[in-house]
Length: 200
Picture 1 (tube, one colour):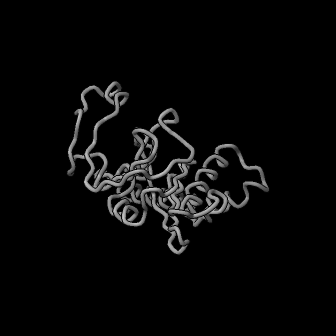
Picture 2 (cartoon, rainbow, N blue to C red):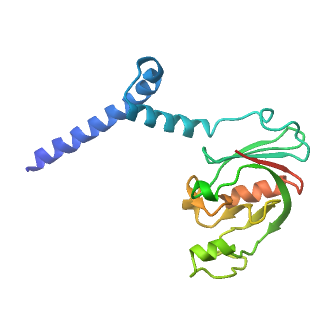
Picture 3 (cartoon, helix red, strand yellow):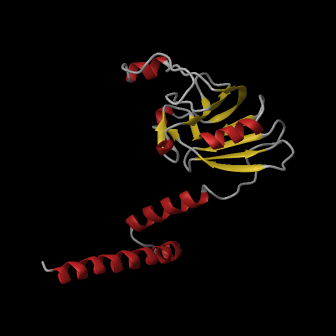
């Protein structure tokens, strides 16, 4: 292959890739009306879900009031929504979620404790799955709970930070909800003990 051939191949790949990217919205728009093939529908639904996860939501479909504020965690879209008690503050954060459905818990709970600089102990089931893990990690850069943690009324469940930013936006936790450290610090400052939490 000559340099000219290589250049043409690269240019063709770029043009084809660009055309495919530009064509994607058309596929999404035509999907319902034209009945595109299954693979296109799956890709489109994934894109739609990811886009919808970062749109503002109203609290009313999920909570009867905002007493003590409210946190909604959408496991499927990997997003955490927060509303203050007076309704004046709304925040939306990308989050990490449990690795698998059997580690996932859904339902209503509340914040029962707030800890800055949390320590971490793996649960018995975590140690069973990962016997080489340490039994205790104190506060600091090696702590999987990051800089702040909101403890929920469910045993072992937390909303916490992480020092491993690659985990955010992924199925990467053993049950907890993870946020970037700067986001959990902000949420920590706004949420109170008693803040209602719903995981869907």
